[in-house]
Length: 162
Image (cartoon, rainbow, N blue to C red; front, side):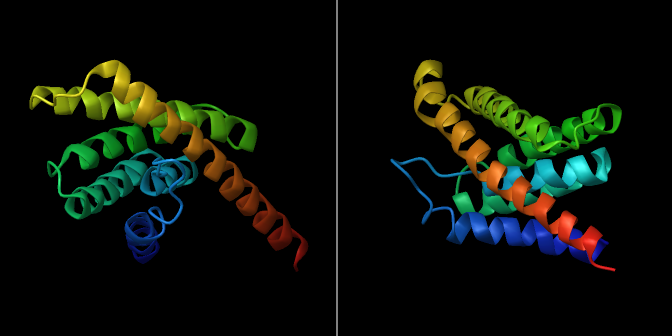
């Protein structure tokens, strides 16, 4: 189980560093580690989500060259929150998971912006929301739709195979 977590989080971090720039559309890159964290937290719970979020965010911070710990903190909080909510609500349907991921991407962007404002980040709120957070949220929703449908298809195949 721990090896699977490490492999998944590390794979998400490597994919973010290598595949995400290739997926760039009009300057918008998806946040692949956030997608991985949300899906892991929904399936495994809040503690697993927080640990996966922290590890994925720390890898993202180290690769990005910004402030170390900002992505780790926001992704850990998002992983814990969605894991806690996921255990109380029925979020097993893809039609719930994808809009939830879009909203969580926006929440994570707001939390990251608030943390960066503590360190005198110069960008205005409106520009960050309009040009960074909202396009990334929509792109994450699109990729999450593909990923959730692929996971549902794999689960259906597994259920049919004796």
